Image (tube, rainbow, N blue to C red; front, side, top):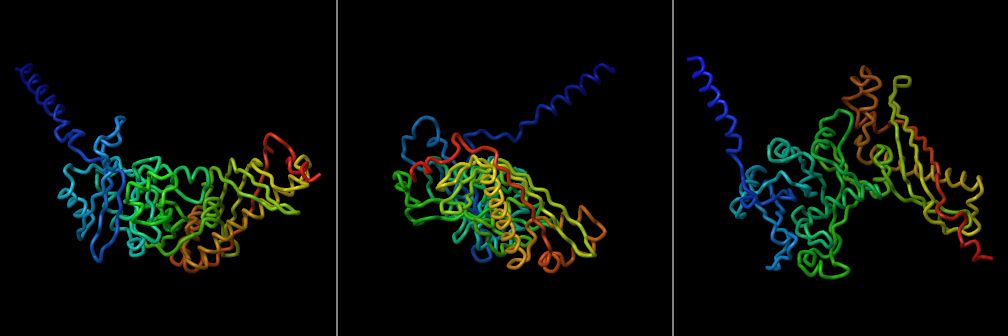
Length: 401
């Protein structure tokens, strides 16, 4: 009897385990979403979803001459309803687990994006590894309509270009949903997002001719960082200030910059490594911040005449000029955040909290508007030139003789 009972229990257990694929979906039943845009139309959310057309992006050339992606849009009182309403347009259920980028319209960002982010973080179909960006002088829907060269799927282009820009030029930042929410809920740091703008004519960019020309009429370009106070967009950092922000937070992996020569011309250097440390402390009852930035660079281009790079004094002068210039870029970013926006986007409050939790309890209530706005920040930059390239002094010196 015990054997029969055990056998019956085993069958029931196996039956339960084997039902794990009851909600499976075949690929030919799904529409894979790679890009998403969120705008506000009055009191309603307007959702735009960019879906891949697998027949046009496969290894075999598409026979229908269709666009490689399709854009579906819908409006509703809530974001969840707007997403579900897309089923009235799409022939397949839209699948969001492969989302690459979410574009937030500037007009909506100025009103607040917390409600939209709650849905994105709560729904089980959305992974949190996609990037968030905010548009500049356009809607999210308009940016997702632009056809892009090289990478036929615009959302993939935006994803790859954002990563490449952050790694090689450094005026932009890759921000995931989890990271933005962490900054949003922090008591000592305000969020930022990279700005996205349309360069050129909107209507021309929506046509196939835009990718059939060697120089497209319309392009999508990342431009500066958007400054948020809580969940509302309050302003922008320009390209130089955005680099300063990334230097402060040790996010610069590589970049290029120049210093001027005494007799004219420029010496251009490639930054190959950076490391920034931030320390907060209380001095005589007032918060203060120290930032120490270490940079290693190689000489990439020399336009100067009569500049001898083989001399130690020449290298020393170039390093000092670079230190002063980068410190100035960092200071301009801090001044903009302090005086224009009163928003601690650098996490100075978090640094004070880590060093002195007891003092932070009395500072946090008026941190952004009072203490951060007048916070003394001491910046020290150590710039080291590691390599001069494959030659010492420039051949330009020979041309002057």
